[in-house]
Length: 128
Image 1 (spheres, rainbow, N blue to C red):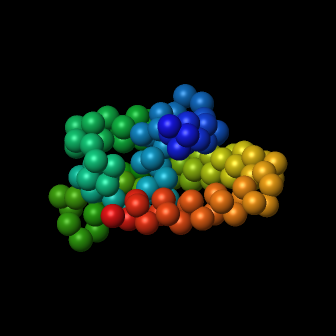
Image 2 (cartoon, helix red, strand yellow):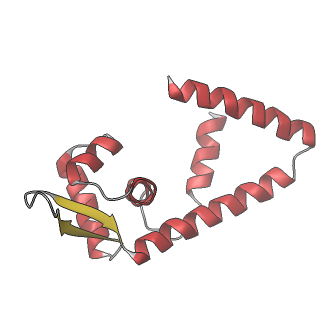
């Protein structure tokens, strides 16, 4: 439960309060992994293509991403971040890092070492 509560608290630190976690996840995936097709995004986020289409439509209307025809296969449409979309991701990451830095600064060195060790274990579990 503590992991879920911490994750929820970190997710609350976002540049746009009205943006859903799913919408932000799409923007973050595009920033980290580059342009995707709709089906690639749906697969990455483990949602249906129609659900991803609704998310992409909303983000496109807000100006956070764009769709362009693929240069080699005109049947494909690539979805990419726009400047404002990149700004949302950057500002959200900045806010989350600041919140976490502030919280970690209040811990003792022993508590920080314990968290560092636990994070390695959590990475191992997540990779399975």
